[in-house]
Image (cartoon, rainbow, N blue to C red; front, side):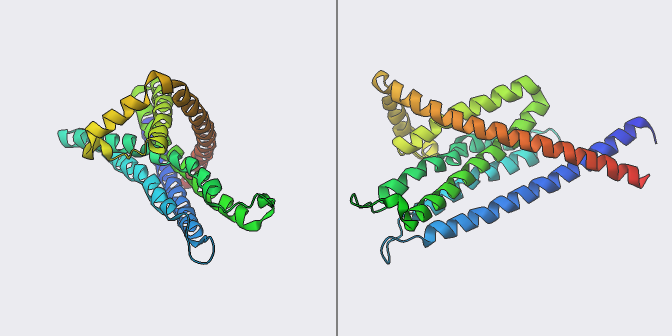
Length: 260
């Protein structure tokens, strides 16, 4: 067996190990998502009122970019053809426009302070129900951040493979910057990803109004903070996965040695 054949087999083993680990990541994320949905749906104010049912929907939307990313990754590995190009374009566009739904969950933390009944004569932060509200929405926010990091990392990896490290990181930083703007549009303009198809004229009108010179300082300040938070999370996520890939690569080498 020549050196080139051994190298190819080693790469195949490594790819299979990495794919197995990525499936495990998604299963763990899905389990925590279902747990978070149960938590927020179980919170009540008084005896009946559920203040956060929309978080369940927002968590679902945070998984939509993952679905598009999986389709994109599957099409990427197929032989080149016209159909492959169409699928890549469609899945890539769907992923890009739905991506902000994942980090958007961070802004849902404001609902704790908007919905929790605060008595000005008491120290509400000493009340256990307040922390139940906060921890439940914080878990949902962290899940959204991780889902966003995972889908971006997966697409970033493919862009880097095709165009190199510099273009790959330029792509990732651009998505994070535009994603922070997308979060702004969703939080303050109440725009949805599907408005691009269902109400394009309304979408354009709202965006041009929001980006008027008198509001640019607020828009920039919010997006700057959101971008830095997303960049911090993504950098840490990438470093952890890179370390994990290194360990998988060593394990793959050990498996090949044992087979000899």
